[in-house]
Image 1 (cartoon, rainbow, N blue to C red):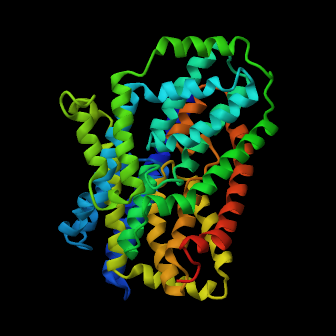
Image 2: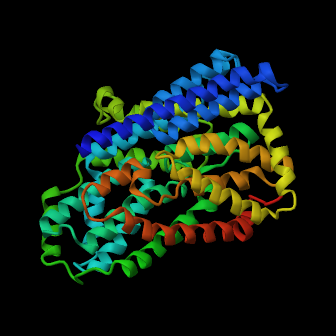
Image 3: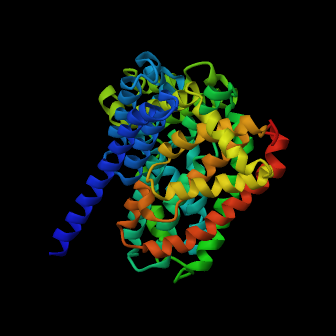
Length: 472
């Protein structure tokens, strides 16, 4: 009976979402016929609201919504079809494809697992040492596995194997710390390097598209890595304070890890190949060659080349998130349409009337918390960035505040979560029963407030010193 009522309620919400979304589309066509407004602006605004409603309620799969956006922008004649599809030809799309393939090679080779177990061995069976190493590893794996879900699944596999060997199960504060931190750190760490996640690559690409401002791997790292590292270290103290470990040493922990490491044996040829390719990638990223040459695709090609590589095309393509590429294209199309129709400038002028006396830091605060509130209703970072970043960017340009400076604020705020339902990785970790939604929210409130303070301090004192001034 309860299941039936729950299903009916879910269906009602779904149909209501469809009704509201389609209502916005109809309004975008009808309103210009009734009152004197720019038809193109009305249409793109209606398409944006249509997408936001369906993205936030998940009445439709986000990828299906993105395809609808691509079709509607062209169908409503906001942009020519060739301009709408331009996003799929962006170098960002191809870089991302190469990164997906590299992540699949890391997974197949088992290199990530070897590194995790080796470093866990340094904890010497001490629980608090283990927890610190675990949090730092989850953060630092941005360098090896440039995909949020990939990092979470890799760490999750390791931890579940370890817990099975050590007979740790819910309720356990050790499990609580690990399973709460895993989705949070994986998201926060994604901003630390320019290839940390698809959303970070997209945000950097959008900044380049809108302002011809090109971050190198090193300049992004210098600007953002210290923030991610600081919050990760702080999380160790926050979580161990909120949920103190119930034991100080793992019974038989050293023996279990030594056994796993011994069974793994010496480095395999596949692991050596992945390390070699990673060395090439790292060199290209640090020397800034990856912005002008297809470094990620070269890495993917080597990993798939007969006799040399370790993947077949079938294996490699299974690791590519094709839906994310469509989401990227839709995001670029929205950003371009908002720019071409001049709606963002008009909107910025409207907002300016209310915030013209705001200091840059006050504006930062408003944008940060507004983004965080909007993010509450979405379980994907990309739509938040696609919807907000072009508006914030043009707002900054209009009022003389560096739009890159403001755009980074949107990116950071979009990575913050309060509930496990806000991310697919959160849902995965929540399903193991080590923590409740209330327990995650309790920790997230403290972590998110600390992140706001860190971003505020970085924006005021640090970013201007590394080439991102406040005033445009």
